[in-house]
Length: 481
Ligand code: SAH
Ligand code: SF4
Ligand code: F3S
Image 1 (cartoon, protein in one colour):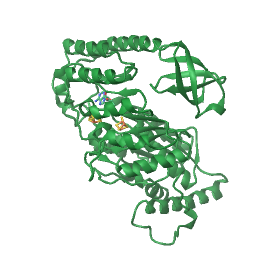
Image 2 (image 1 turned 45 degrees about the vertical axis):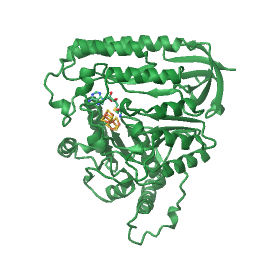
Image 3 (image 1 turned 180 degrees about the vertical axis):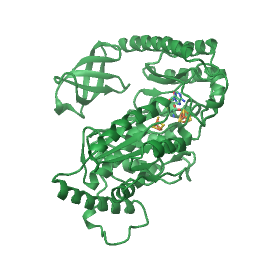
Image 4 (image 1 turned 60 degrees about the horizontal axis):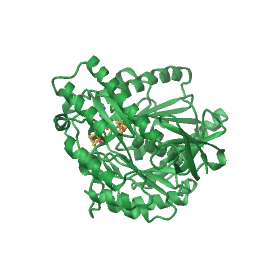
């Protein structure tokens, strides 16, 4: 943690401060009192487990939850057999919700045997009123529910839940607030996600994210630079800039700044070696960004550029605001500037009204672009989005068959692209000891490919020149050279 506030010096007899983040540090200290009482009763520290569903945005939020729990005195638990369990939920597709309900059932059974246990839920799924109704009706054992807009209040809400019996619920519809300088417990010592913006204004017609994450808000570039400088002095050399549409970063700031200008600022930070970002919306990807990437030593040669569909007609229905021709032209310009760049994507199969011809157009773009990898999703109807009300929902078996064809194509292309790099020497950031074989370490290349090489834990966080000896489809075996 790079933000040092001594919780022992906070006067707990005083009223809680009104301003943030001081108010939250006050409640962290209050929670610490409760934790001490727990220790006296049970002869050990209470344990806490944070379980994350969904995207990197949620993963980063979970690091903030862990940071606060650590400050409050909890010991991190590896499993959900803990005194405090919190699910940071996702609702982008129906199966994300189903997973949460399923696991909540088993947590409830555990709580019956351990009544002192506390269960909390937060994240995107909690921003849906129907979900909260269902939880109130059928999951009464949950102690705390909050959403995406007030996650910075976690310390205060945790304290309320520890003090109270029954369900504490705090949900906000939206916010324009960004609270800086809360503690964070990072998963990796050498790399970190960094939020550069929150929310989304794009309202793609299938997508629930704008409803559950609220309107787009950019952090000031000064706060971002300050955070990254702090991370670098704490040992971080790779950052992943996070936002639903990083290409529109800065547009609504009092002093507007472009994403490319932000990148140029970050490039200057000494000790920072790799810059990644996601996600890039094709409609806002500027030539300035392409030129900035091409001229950069630090920005990784990887672009995640969600296609969603290759049919201009479906793209219009999706409210994506680009055509297949514009997308292909953009990819052409990116590849012309950076021939070695890896391009990855997201594709939805079975959007309402998708015909075989539309699907063929998607397959055609996939073949033309030659993606290095692609996440393929079966369209999931999200109540409240415009697409959910569209007639002509595609039958399940048709979607499934198309999905399988797309997946086969995507995998074949990805394997061929990966194979083509065999024999090359590239730079690897070593991330961890291989989970299956402890004589190997695993890491990522700039283009995001995974490589396993012989090594040991002392190499974690270091950059190694490696030769890619053998391609295994989605990853490589190699050796340091
Ligand atoms: N902001 C990012 C996407 C965030 S959601 C972007 O615009 O690229 C991640 C991916 O989930 C999306 O790219 C989309 O492919 C998929 N997705 C979103 N809503 C979906 C839905 N209702 N059904 C299926 N997939 C969906
Ligand atoms: Fe969803 Fe579209 Fe926003 Fe991405 S850009 S989060 S797909 S609405
Ligand atoms: Fe899911 Fe929320 Fe991310 S809905 S994909 S966790 S923004």
